[in-house]
Image (cartoon, rainbow, N blue to C red):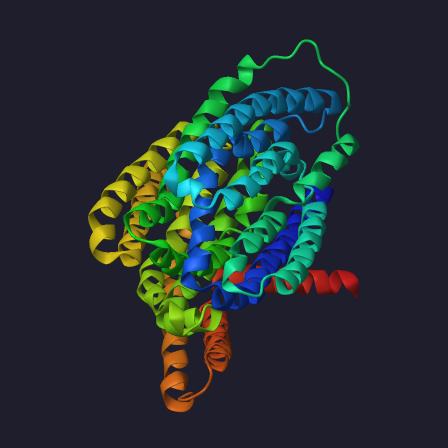
Length: 488
């Protein structure tokens, strides 16, 4: 058991390194790309990627989440694991083949897709690499060291290609191709590496039927999630123009970076929590979910407030003054950091291991319906800001429904979670950052304003959290002291 505990900490550390790389990569590339391609160019790529996400969703069904749970349960039996993976891949191949055919037909008959045919054709690679990558298997086996090293290597290669090949507004197709390489190119190595973990033989007595129902449940959940996470850009593209999509994409890009931080701890816990449920280790299950909830409060609340206060500087630094239309959408969408963090914990880390994914499906369908209605009303009048408002309200209702469903479970752990300490520390940190901003930073560059205010905000936040004895800060401090003692 000691070995498993170390493994959890190692996985969290490696996933944190991966998260940091996911933050650094767009921080380096997006300021450059957004200034070269301008809102129209980045908007075209965002529109295409949003369309492709729907075909990827169809081809992958609900396998990216179901595969983690199914493989985590049998990971101690190599033969059973190999058979399970083979069954899931067969289902995945059939679905992705049908999706690929539909994708090619859509390119030929939909005028908006035909206009950027080259970029859409390049994105066929996205569909294929998602199929062969089996990312769900590596997560089920908690191979986060491998996932991190492989991902960082591809990002470095993509970074070099970005600066070598994207130089003018018309290079948005090249940018789209490099984005594909950075996001799913590493799946090629996943495919080659499969023989390390599986028996490569054909299992005649396959049982596909056992997977169909749960995969379908996860698929429906994925449909609803994809609707309200990608429909914004799609509806903006059809109802407005590429420039408006570009404005919205800039705000969503920053939100995406921050969300990866908020969900970094939880993303490694699904296989372990599924394993605990399988082994009926319910106390361990509660400890991990409580710690994750404390982490969300500790990191999501300050990020939400800081990037609301300094949205203009963040947008101008990452994208340039041409993206002033992104400031209000970014401010509207920032509260979703907290809501997404909670729904990721409640839905993916608690309900899914409990095999209550139908409740997650209901919450996400509710969010999708609300998002579609608000988008239809607000986008024609308010553009990118209307889409951001729709996402905010949708995420709120998703989280509220999941809290209601898990109210009995949450009563058992909520006493150990004190969000009010995070709020107090955040408010004092925000006041300190604003005082420094108005008192000393007039006329400085956006980068320096962000650097100084973030340093002040972060220092005050941590100090106040420590004074208030925030549970997560104390946990980190004690963990550091324990590790230091072990090394002495």
